[in-house]
Length: 394
Image (cartoon, rainbow, N blue to C red; front, top):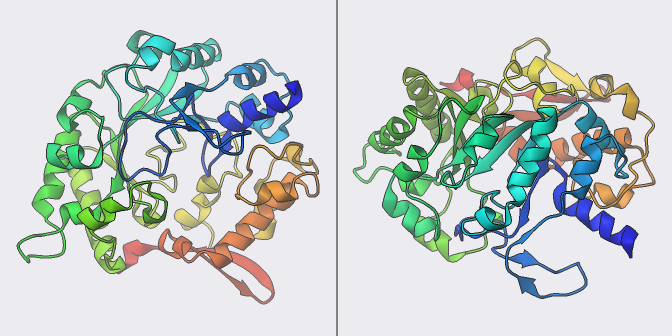
């Protein structure tokens, strides 16, 4: 029973996204955003029951162990943490749930652990009112504030228990973080469509959003709503479908990029990556927040992004993969690698084999990657990943 409990602790904390290790200090979320994919409560499904409970803190035991150099049964995570690979705090649950974090202080404990070794953390939150400023000032942090709209009415419609846009930004402390990003996520096209028949989008409303955040943010990171995963399907009837033509989006994102630059902000996007100021969509550059592993794909495609290479092959993927992990079997089935199906192959294939499989499988099968700037094809029997430069279309 004890061994199973330890696996659950690890499973509840660590994921591996394309750029970061990811950790949630709570399960469930208090904000009730109608577009969100996350459950508003801790879900006991697959944990011995089907009941749902209120928000609960996750265990930090595995994180404390791995920071101290002890094994947690996952060689990939142990390698990344040893290299101080950045961790994202807040992916499926906000790290500062209102009324809970001030009392429970689980996020505070996590930050104290990170401060001991100056561990780099990218914090994603909608709640800037409960930030432990004195603690954050001692560490190595980037703050990403999520904001779907500049209009208070939109926020009241979409997010049942969050602060208003101006209040959210006013509470961001200065001189504390390495960088402050406003995550325009999700970007919901219907909120910004023109009502006067002059173009697809109302650029004056786009400008108002950028004007609002310009005094706070160093950069803006934008991505679309994931329509297939939202918890409240009724919101689709209110905001309308995501049916914008791709060329219209390229034109819009090009405009946002230019206007962000005029206001002294950088521009990042995952949807049309060539328009981004970096192949990393989160609002970071490699010289700002060191990414310790060349095999993380956001940095792997840097050579495609800057034109150094025309395409990547499986040989390039292997070259970028760390020697220390080549030949290592993925020990635990509780933590996904790059794909959601990788755990089925755990203990049967190496981490490197799963890594190669996920790149080649997803790039062939998922057409959405084409619109993110990546696409693949087999040329003379060789699998190649190419990069589509949308800047050539405008």
